[in-house]
Image (cartoon, rainbow, N blue to C red; front, top):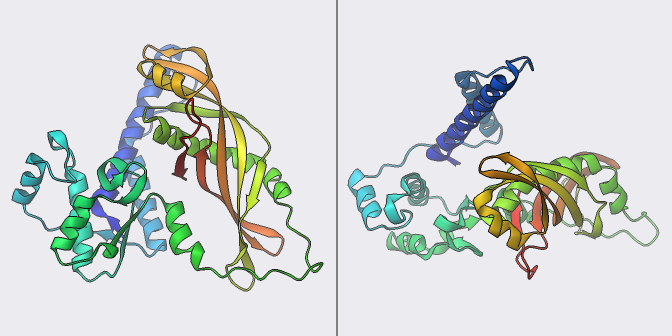
Length: 330
């Protein structure tokens, strides 16, 4: 199930990115006179295409978009003025409030257990390090006559799959000695190095944002080391023909990205990096080497790989004490 307000937020994010892309193309045209051949895109066309593809994806997953909750404006105004969760100071939190009332309606309508997926620790979690619902939400749930076990929160899809999907698969029986050669996990990863670099590049901006709490832009992975300290998990059976392999590995990633000049003290505290050059007036381009722990999943049919995906990515050394990892699902 997908709250209607979250669906609209996804569309709005695409709208903003389209506007940003067109703005950059305009800037490029002013420098080159348009000779490079790039053309602006039509926002309505992009939005329509994304809207249709997202709806098809949700349909394929047998998911549905929830209607907006039925709640009086008076109730929302009272919450914003106090403020009461999910509203915060200055009244911010209107869309979170709609999501919260949607969750309550699901519970009231008879859902035995509602699992809410959100990395927004500031607004929903008990604390930044404890992915449990904030006590004020659970208190309101109990006031309606429902126990806290009816409404659970997990930080990301990877953790949801680990708790509710993967954990339910049977573990593959251990073969008798000599009947089957051990799996060469190092070779499995080294043979997919290009795919690994792409996955890390896609996930690393979110990991850095979660760890530092500040903006990072235009991240590009320059180089990725060979995997080290590979740790396999028990092999699980998907069905009679397929099995699930899970493993984690350490990588050293050389990356180049943009930071804001005002955030330079935060990055200096967190990383040893090289400043490349000014990119714009308020941003800097920097290079840094980052140690990350990546967890991968592979669906195997015999010796062939059907799917290969990144489950989670975690920075293993962050700040002077190197003891504050930042896990983020991808």
